[in-house]
Image (tube, rainbow, N blue to C red; front, side, top):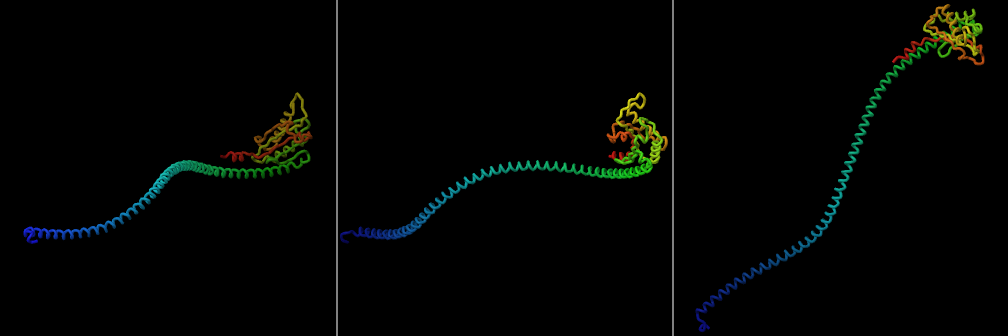
Length: 308
């Protein structure tokens, strides 16, 4: 073959062979590297594929959970909106209730203040009334004391008069006490003849004894009243009727008292009652009478009553 292939061509072929073997060796080495890389990439791919599968599973799970959470969120959001709405209504109602309560509180405060003012006024009035009550109690005490003194004086005066007129007790003369006054009743038969205004001697003595018994008494008021029966008088001369007869008889008694004692005429009054105050409608003799009404002077008592 050497003889058939030129040496030059042989060299070229040998050189090319060596070159190809060298390239082949490089390719083998590169192929080994690539195979190693492929194995590594295959391994990485499997790893990434497993991770991807895990991620897909996680993503699916997270998606499911997300949708559930989204549904819950939407429900919570809806519930929150409802709560906000209700809370707004409650706040509105609370505000209205608060305003109503504040109005009622203010009204109550005003009423309470008014009641306090009224109470203060009533307390002031009560203090004034208490002072007035104390003054009235003092005046009442004074009046009771005066009345007690006057009652005692009236009793003593009645006893004195009764003792002075004891001799006339069975002759139509009576002495009694009523309403703080002393009454000396004298039947007309003791003093006057029938229809007359002239006092007889025995009646005059009784009147003088009465006047003497009271002439030293101070602060008295004496009213002499004349009374008649119902028998009508008809005369052209005085006395013409029972009015004149009753007045003239009481006046005659007053004159005898003032002319025969020290009784002050200023404390005496003469009055005629005619037939209109009978003591016994069935007994005319008892109705024909003179009543001497002796009462204490009440000026001091009236002064106490009139005190402000």
